[in-house]
Image 1 (tube, rainbow, N blue to C red):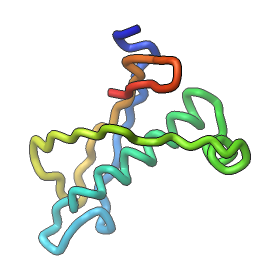
Image 2 (image 1 turned 30 degrees about the vertical axis):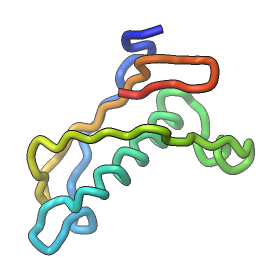
Image 3 (image 1 turned 90 degrees about the vertical axis):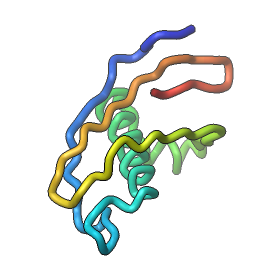
Image 4 (image 1 turned 120 degrees about the vertical axis):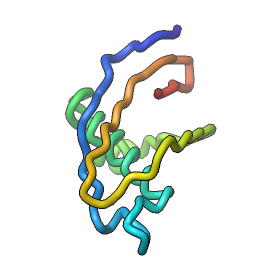
Length: 98
């Protein structure tokens, strides 16, 4: 299957001091932290599944097999960035986000 199977989950996120390096721009691994937080919110808000219970009690993990990032421009403290997530493919044992 392809295309967007679940409507996109989008929200603005404020870039905070804790996301930034001494130059005041986002330290690139922090984008992955922000994205993982976005995935947790997607589970809780869109799928109505408690992510903490999904991982902790049900003992189901979401393994990342492949991860690609394209950085278009640096983000600075105080700016807002739009995070979006949608499922583009569902397989027997996997799914793809975009």
